[in-house]
Image (tube, rainbow, N blue to C red; front, side, top):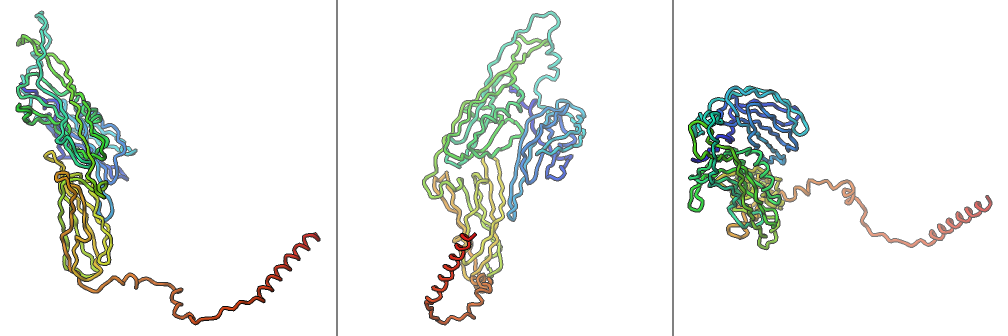
Length: 482
């Protein structure tokens, strides 16, 4: 019989109905979950903050009728007109422990050193949406201790066919190249040992502290539901339960080492001679250990920009407001980099003002998707440009972006393909003419520029020296007389 994990853990976010509280003076929001859920569905409390960082937060409240089921996080960043806009959220998942009406009392949380009061509410926990339990619903009645004088039940330990593993899709990467890591529990389809989750949220929190590498940028897939999926492992079918998944991007050449970590599971021994009346299972625990995993990191090939370029498989998309332009009138141009890689680390193209154009700092927008074991997305740099000279121009002369493609193992360049035609008068001297040189330079044209002879007046020097000598003599005379 296959183990039933969904009876203990089901992290399902239902955000269809909310009760919200806002913090005065700050963009902090605390959102409560829906008013009605099934017993096998999750309920949440979400703390969100706009344009700031969650520096500190109190523990989420304990709620009678709910048990805590673990946290998840999300974040988003954009830059418009030079202003950075960001949001960050922490979500606490709660699992119902019974059916009925659960009273969520009013509570206070301290977020970024500010105490926020949250009004309570009542949550109705109904029957499960599905029936995940696959054993006799009267099990608790028939598994009571034997009080009729029968001999003690002998229990045996059935060997489990399951394991814990941390796997990566690559064993060696370049600096900045992403690789996918998955921590999962595997159970064979023909496994007969009864296995169940045990304090999974607490254990997972400790496990992640150990396996997350410090020398990597992380893109977390934020697994909120631990659900089984069939997978073939060396020709044998297993059910895989993903607990954690992320893409990592090494920041230096230090090897990425994922240590061995333990996972304790609730495992039952079964009665050697099961009876209709009596206890046929005995609670026990089993600890599974993952194997240590190392990913090697190597330097990028030699290049003048090897310490600066992004690493990934990228392409270019362009958007331009118009290709028929006039001098002095601005136009917009979007330089969009999209593909697979660490989109967050993409820097803007290096663009400098020229005699032909004035370029203004771009607005920046980014979009990141984490799906199908890949991290993809786009980063858009929106420029406002003023043409100063008439003529035909290729924007590829100004917009170039170099990156390293780890698949092809070569450096590549994304170069703008758009071309524009500019009409109108030249504006290259407009700046110089608009500057006032000042009154000093205005007098140049009125000044006498004729040549004059400079004479050496020795008599004046003699008289000056004589005057100085007489003053010194008088000072000495007055000093001695006094």
